[in-house]
Image 1: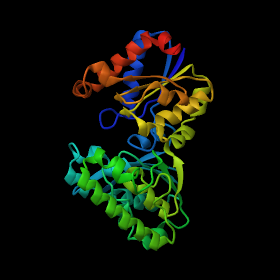
Image 2 (image 1 turned 90 degrees about the horizontal axis):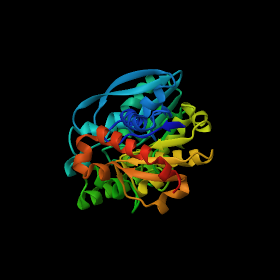
Image 3 (image 1 turned 30 degrees about the vertical axis):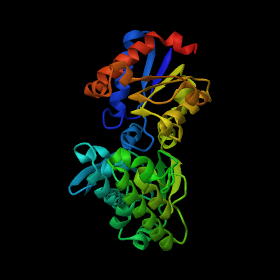
Image 4 (image 1 turned 180 degrees about the vertical axis):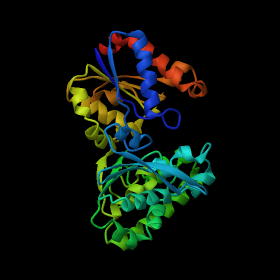
Length: 353
């Protein structure tokens, strides 16, 4: 059997590459006769440039503003005149140096992403693809725009540039399913902080609308990466699925056409996963070739009836396998490997569900 192992990162716990290796090792332990191909994925969040770099280009490093007070070295990819930027390299949760807090949620910004755009422009890029996801900020992309000199200067700098926002979700900037309400709590924001962030983004949305002459706050994907999507749309960016960007560049179609099974995964398989995130996008693509998909995730908060319409035949939880979230995170790679081995031994049962 030909098995494609193509997970996203497991939050800050495992990179996509490490997760793919753990799943491959576990599956191979139980089914040594299977051909296993590791193809780490990204839907625009952490691991985006690494997933793209396997297909060529030169990795670059820029010293940019971090999400709080210190600068960071951020990597980005240049392939001919196309630049690939990963927002998490400049304002990712992993850059906080510890668990997110209310204070970090209110202070974090996206200025470093703007610095990366400046670096790409300086290198002669005529197309800039920005992967969105995994950010620790909820500033609506204001920091990004400030790094480019403000709304008008940013528009001038990006005029004539083919700008692409590779989004991980479809959420708008504002409201009940907006950046602050949905993702703020994951970044340390409590109830009052969410309200503050929402009002800031509401004011910022008005500034953007006044500056570019149109509203972008309600557009699908405007809330991606803490609202960076909104700022990019105001600058004229087109929206594309981050998963599709990776799929096209890594010839995913060729892999799926010859696969018997796809195994993917992420940190938490929940309702947000059904809103355009990688696991369901990949599963839907696999299903179009008649290939079933298994999901192995850190936590699973969906029932079979929620995900079976995407071509997913089963979902396994590392947390359930380990016994608790604390144990699962203590040695995530080993527990994911163990879950993959158990799942492989039970594959015939899963297959017949």
